[in-house]
Length: 390
Image (cartoon, rainbow, N blue to C red; front, side, top):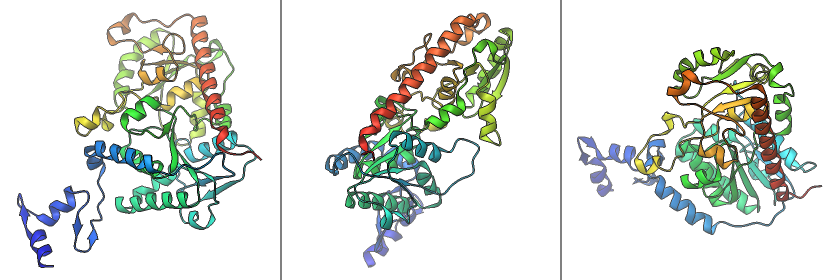
């Protein structure tokens, strides 16, 4: 008792030792309990190489259960009102397309212990991780470990649909969950190569879980580009660099006979879909946003410089001509500049840049759409073996 008082009563750099330990040490035993503050995003980035090593060790000892499973369980969080697409609904629709006529359960965190069926395939939805914003990091850690324990106890395998890997807290908790259990992260906008370089080895990509059949139908447009409005959807939200790019591009696009529509957030997502799918040209970027490129160098070098944004998939789904910066992620998915999309020209060549002929534009847009549909359909077929139909 007196030893603890002496240690926590010391001062370091003018600050009480207790405060230093609370702020900067991830795991510190104070009188009788573990410190409540689990590492912040800043600390997670700092110790990321250690976390990756721990994931690897845990994964090698995690249980492996037989396939296929007999039913599907969805673990959901709190529904949220938002202007963008509902990722939970899309993941559930995708699962229903992959495994039709299979018994399904929708479970909250409180339902899992009593209602989760044994030998199920469990899909932990994005909203479950979003709920972590209302808990302390230590509580989030307990929830992940507790869910992994229940999954292993009931011989369930798990899939975690994530849009991408660059949000460190989501990647940490999803990576921990699949490492402790028989599971994988399914990625839609990051390639398997970049995800593994980042440190998430138990992942499957590409899996177009956020583009189920009903979403594809909502975005489909069979009209040729020549019959669509002479407008270009120019993405301006997300990355501040896009606003600067729009200022540079506006004159060039208008010279090519296109009116610029700065596409951003709208009050209702359905209004955005109706407006965006009508257009023939989409301009966007796939640069990783600068706000995510932070932390020590040993964390930053693991990040891929690019990520495939939602606007890219929207352009392919609507059979629009995509103008986007060429990058390794798109190439990993099989999309090539000049064949499936147009590469974003350099600043110095903007003054003389011209759109291709209508026939060339139509050919590129069609090939991009067809490759996207092929990629999506193959990802559905690749998942069918996980669950026993009927």
